[in-house]
Every structure is written in C-alpha cells, then in structure tokens.
Length: 208
Image (cartoon, rainbow, N blue to C red; front, top):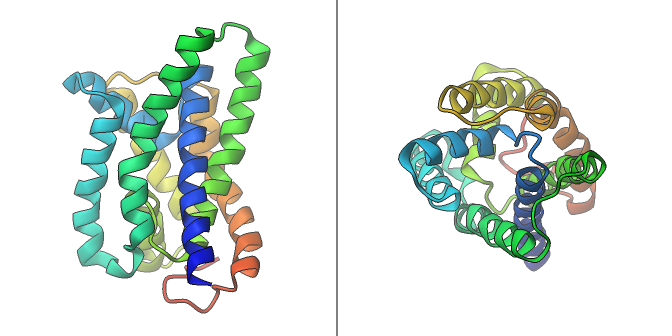
C-alpha cells in the first residue's frame, strides 16, 4: 500500500505540472498559485520554476510548525518538480509547435488544465504521503477555522490571485474558474480517491 500511495502522490504531482503547463500555453489566465508565482517572478525577473520552489520552501517552514503531519515525500517531490517540469514542458511545446493562437485549442487546453489540476491535487492529498505546501494551506485553514475545505480553498485561492494580479500577473477565465471552483472540483475527486486508497481514518483528513 505504501508504494501505491507514493505512486499516486507522484502521479498527482505530474498532473499538477501538466495542468500548469496547459494554463500557461492557453494564455487565458493561470491557477491562483501560478498567478501568485508568476507575479513575483516577473517582479524579481526570475524563472517561474525557481521562484515557485522558493515560495514553496517558505510555506514549508510555516507548515512544519502548523501541522507537520502534512509533510512527506510527496511534499518534497512537489516542491522541486512542479514549477521546473512546467518550464521544461512549456519550452518543449513552444519550440516544437510555437504559441497557440486559436481560441478553440486554448479553451481545450484550459479545460484539460482544470481537470488535471483537480485530479492531481486530490491524488496526492488523499495519498497521505505529504502535500504541496500551497495545498496544505487550505487544509490548515479548514482545521483551524472550523470551516469546510471547499470554503477554505476559495479563500486562499482568491487571496493569492489578488496578490499575483497586483504584481502584474495577467488574469483570465482560468483564473476565475480555478479561484472559485477548484476547491469543489478537488473535493469531488478526493471523495473518489479516498475510497480507492482507504485513507479516511488517517490523521490529516480534513472536514468535508
């Protein structure tokens, strides 16, 4: 079971990297955490993946004191792979195919990004092998404030969108969808994977 959960956690991270890549290629706005990191990377003139790693490590310090049960091998995998893999994927696609101009293909990429992001986050949350620092924040808020995961996710997502936008990151339909609906989408897939992984009784399962 341990190996299966690590595989699920790693697959979740890959899905997240693919989702971020899809959002960036679609150019219709990115998910809240990517918007936040894009804003700061533009401000500091840094690679997206590099700043995402830095911001994740800073969040990790807080999580260590707030709920270290959320930290595991999946956390480390996520911190160092998502942003850097996304940079690699974006460069490979744009070098091979250029940028995507047609609205239809961009909307398809956006839809794939939403599904991939929701499935990826749900996979490594329910695998209980550690979650990404950003995804740990709504879990901690939910536990401390006594509110549902859906609501806490929306609060965290909207807050980071505001910060990223104020720093110059662009907004779009993907930003709105992920800021307000990603929480419910993730919870939908969590309910599915929870049954599959039989992790309901484990320590950091949050309120539904």
